[in-house]
Image (cartoon, rainbow, N blue to C red):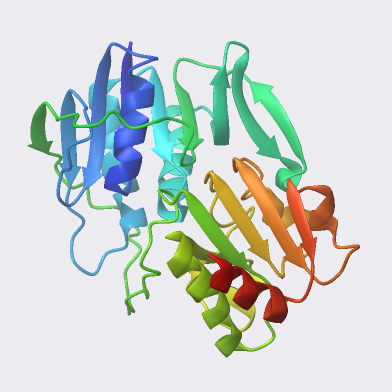
Length: 294
């Protein structure tokens, strides 16, 4: 069987290629821009024209799919890639199993109903298409590509054009690769208080993440830091939730962490029923003391 992997980022491509090796005999990867070493037997490089959104590559991806005829497609679960996954599924007359957390003998395990439930499904039809989050597979270290070829661009009938763009402020640590993540929530009442979380990150070598209100409510942190059902799905060894109540929409993004530590001044906060270790206290007191003790 042949597998096609489609990824926006090099790290995700390496993970998907390693996972595809357990499912197929031949691996073809689609990359955007520069082809990175991910361990595929062949890489098809798609160069998106300047001024055109990545979503507009869907028709080009569909053409590559037709040429390769894979039996399984693994797609990185980013916003752009989910658009491409939907277009590909329509093109192939099948459905996508989204946000897969693991592959089992009975099928692919994923969340539904906004993350409050899980189910295991088997793909139907001639081709199986999955979007897969970070951490489901482990990347094969030092895996090199086979042949690299440029995939001819297919001009879409209605291209999505970029009218303006703004560089995203990077948090400094790749949250998908971080062993420890410190997450800030509504318990931080002033933007300057985030320095307490940053200081703790510095001591732990951790990445700084947050709940949705800090990115879309007050815009204190970039959207790349948001953990939750429509944001990042992380699997660090330790997740330290600071001032986060523990609503379902957030917890589905971190509930596969090795251990969850919670700090909240509300002893009745829902997160204390979901964490491994909890500390009732005000972040203004706890975080400086914790940082000083490390």
